[in-house]
Structures are given as C-alpha cells and as structure tokens.
Amino acid sequence: MRATAFWVEAPSGGALREVAPGDPRPGDVVVRTLVTGISRGTESIVFRGKVPATERERMRAPFQEGDFPAPVKYGYLNVGVVEQGPEELVGRTVFTLYPHQSAFVVPASAVAVVPEGVPPRRAVLAGAVETAVNILWDAAPLVGDRISVVGAGMIGCAVARLARGIPGVEVALVDVDATKAEAAENLGVAFASPGTALGDRHLVIDTSGSAEGLQLAIDTAAIEGEVVEASWFGDRAVSVNLGGAFHSRRLTVRSSQVGMVSPRRRATRSTGDRLALALDLLRDPVFDVLLTGESSWRDLPDVMAAIADGSAPGLCHTIDWSDA
Image (cartoon, rainbow, N blue to C red; front, side, top):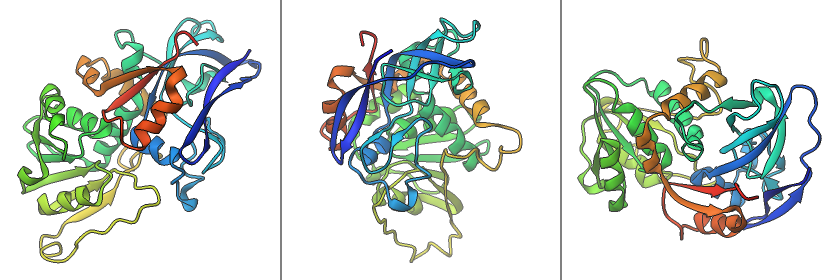
C-alpha cells in the first residue's frame, strides 16, 4: 500500500511525499483518510520551526515521524474510514490523532469511533473540543460566573460554546478581529473588542497566543479572580505587567495544557474518555461555525504556508482527502 503524506521539510517549507504505511498486524486497522484539520496555532509553530528545544519531546504528536524542527510529519486531526481491521470497526468512521496522510495503519486502540450524526468534517474538531473540555476541567467555572474568553480562534470558540451551557453564566468572547462577532453570535455568546471588554470577570481564559491577550485577561479579572493561560507561545518570550493592583487583587494565573488530563479529573477520566466526550459533544451542529475553509490535499503545502504566515485567516481549515 502506498499513501501520500505532508511533511515539513524545513522551517517554513513543506511538501507532499509518497510513503509506505506498512502492513497491518493482528489488532491493527487500516484507515483511509477522508478529511484532516489544521490546528492553526500549534501547526503554525511547527511549520515555522519554532518549537523550543526544551519542549521538542513533550510536543511530539502521537504518530509523528521525524524530529523538530525538520524534517517532520506532524498533525493530529484526522477523520477516516476503517478499511481493514476488527469486524466491529470495518466501515466505521473514526477519529485518529494522526498527521496529514491519505491512508495509514495504527493499532485499533488508537482510533475513536465518530458517533452517528456527526459528519466527518465536523469530527475533525474533536481535538479542539477535547482541549476545550480539559481547559474547563482546569478552570472549574461555577454556576453564575462571569467568564471571558480572550481569543476567538478555534479553541477559544469551543471553550465559549461549552461554557455557555453552565446555568447562569455570562460568557463573552474577546478578539481584536471584529469579524469574529458573527461567530460569537452563532455560538450564542457575547462579543467584545479589547477596548470594550468588561471587567470584574470571575474567570478569564486566554487562548489568544499574544502577550496583549494575556495582559487583557489579567486586567479584566475580578478581585481574587482566576486567569487560565491556554495559549502556547512556542519559543516566544512573553512580558506582562504584574505591578499596580495585581497583588492587591489577589489574582491567580495558571496554565492549562491538553497533554495530560486535568488533575481535577485524572483519577476518574482517561484521555480516551475525554476524546469520547468531545466527539459526543460534536453532535451540536453549531460547531460547524468553526469550519471556515476547505482545500484539496494537493494544495496542502501552500495552504499550510499561508496559514503559518497569517495570510489565510479563519478558524479551522480542513483538507479533503476523499480522492487521494
């Protein structure tokens, strides 16, 4: 079996390669990819070769090949159909934390069945929704909280949509891009620009990937409020002002990262449980709002370059592999 895969050949340069996925062994599945999704933040950092040396081992994707900075085959939003494997999986649509590749072989335990009613293209959002679930497990919002999410990207939008389901909460998405107001409206949450963002927020979650976003989160938190930093800055240094009223307001700033299940749930939930929950939450058709671009696999090198340099804005861009 031959397949086509996308590799980052050098910082800011990618190409399609013909690869041999290998022969399946007992307990493996052969998956034919239907669609993959590009995780703008993380994959842009990888594409530009900006993964810090200290984080290169921790940031490896489950089925990554090669090493940072390059050449490397990277990605983790893959939806396909099982062509060979255990009888109960053959013909099923599955989500796999696998890079951009037209077909592949993995252990059956590595795939998660996509629930009925969740279209394949929407299912690529499972990684974003899983991250949002972990962020909210870390943040632990309470009934009636005033919550802001700074950064209306794929992750921020997913966090806002899930948080709005908590009774009595007031959720606002904050972003410098005024065009994100339409997405916020469709998600059922308020929208604000940085200049109009409300203060006195019990919980502020930063997904902006910018120092300005983190500073805004700190500045708009309530007394004894909590700021959860969910961005990943790669090798960039970030400076914020912790003077003024930061200490007198007794603020808490802490990180959230999807690599491990939140300590609040680690004793009772596995990563598999968390992914299954995310896929089930994607029954909500409103998540289609996050799917803002689509291209053929043939255009993937150019698409990835445009996303990484900021010339192709949007939320989740998907890659169609159906004719590969």
